[in-house]
Length: 338
Image (cartoon, rainbow, N blue to C red; front, side):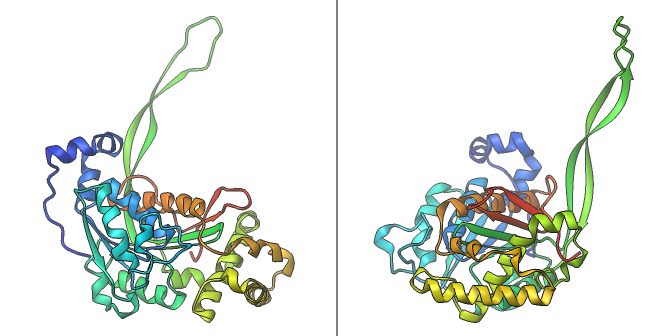
């Protein structure tokens, strides 16, 4: 992680971020103002993350992507005229317009060519649309340099993200009793309790993406497992598909891609000794393309988690967030790998 310098909030910044400062305090805003974030992958999800982080008032955001902008992407930052150009370069102008006080940088290299030391230049690394093996490598490099790491993806209506804060300290405001007042009324109501808000510091440990992805899931409580099993197995199947096929499921090869996903799912279930009916074939019908609503939901939550981690305010997610916009449209959080 890069060294910290003394952060001063200017009058213009104080005016711009007034509501945020009222919400989470001046010190938290200063931490945001001093943070350098790397965002790899300018997908629809990447665009939502870029928007939310830029508006929050971080110091700098580096947009990294070697791929070209294409039709069908949910990245709303890319103008129609820029289709075919580099996705990071095409997104830069609209990101900068969101907040001129944030430094927006562009890197058009392939993330796979970046050294481990490169990731140590940032305060936060967030990646989308990269294969599992590359996630393992980047996460390990971030842990080496004590840099918080996030990775997320959407597949059609389905999405997830993972958080590794290594060892994270945060402040939580809690209400604690301080006294009680006797109620002398004839109704003899119970004593009223007085409380005050205190800020409690807590520390939480995390595991790497590899440890979580490859972990034995049998230790998860049965109640939790019933709630998240379809999400976990679909995530594994989709990420394995990407590694094996070097791409995501595509509408143009829908039938063959669905067959491949079923095959991968069956293998996962066999290895886990789970009934094959846990994830129905129809569940994968909604995993094609980029869907703006899914990207918006997941990008909003993921960006908020980065803000919480950087500001050291409130309880962070530990460590997976799952979303399926085709079913219950609600997010699920689960600690996996602990």
